[in-house]
Image 1 (tube, one colour):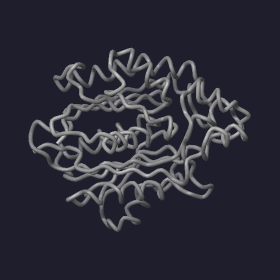
Image 2 (image 1 turned 90 degrees about the horizontal axis):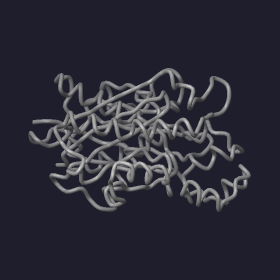
Image 3 (image 1 turned 30 degrees about the horizontal axis):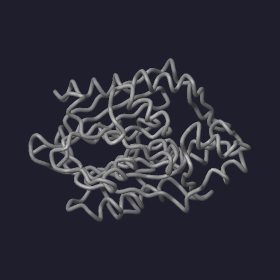
Image 4 (image 1 turned 90 degrees about the vertical axis):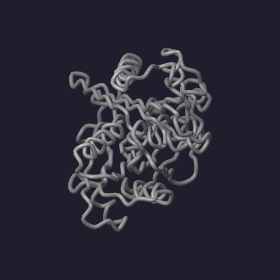
Length: 308
């Protein structure tokens, strides 16, 4: 047996927040938000709503469709409830999973794939069999609502995947990770202050490393780009997702874009998009699926899975 995704869940807080609402606070032109970055809605967590609350809701959604019980919880987040302890420990308590190991991973928008890699590695080492992996962020809490360059981009949410044993040849075939600390200041939240980003530099890394990390994961899996049924990309913004898909020669039906209604949900982006893709057009047994993300750090990750 190998390890694969056996169920999915997601949670987006509150009602959709339209461009008019974002524009009112930031001074951005609603039409510019739609035309330039392709977003018309996103979800904002309430001021006191935590990453734990979103993570638990997504986890409960995933566990509803699972026939297994988690024996590990890994939470990818850059907006933990507090520096110590790990948000995963709060999630564990809320889910009633006393004694189950729990820890956080911070690799920004690549965090979910990093967390998936950690969980998968622990199954290979036979430490666990059924990890629960969650990406959750309340990123709008660290974004200046008056900054027209960043406020329209981000939303909040959580996505979860329950892993479990699947037959050989299915499940997680390969994971590839990368980081370059010399680019760490391209996107950052200082100890005191709001999120700041060099958008041009970040986009450059996405367009460079996105295809490279995907190809590296495909090579490790012994698969080819033209064999992929779908590629779930970090939803930085719809325009960038489309540019990336065109750059590697993949069509819109292969690379779904949901950022137009979710915004960039940071660590939650990949699992939220994965769950939305499955709801829109359910994955079929045998589908070859790739996950790709580039995030602050700068970091990048890709995973290749055979759906079961």
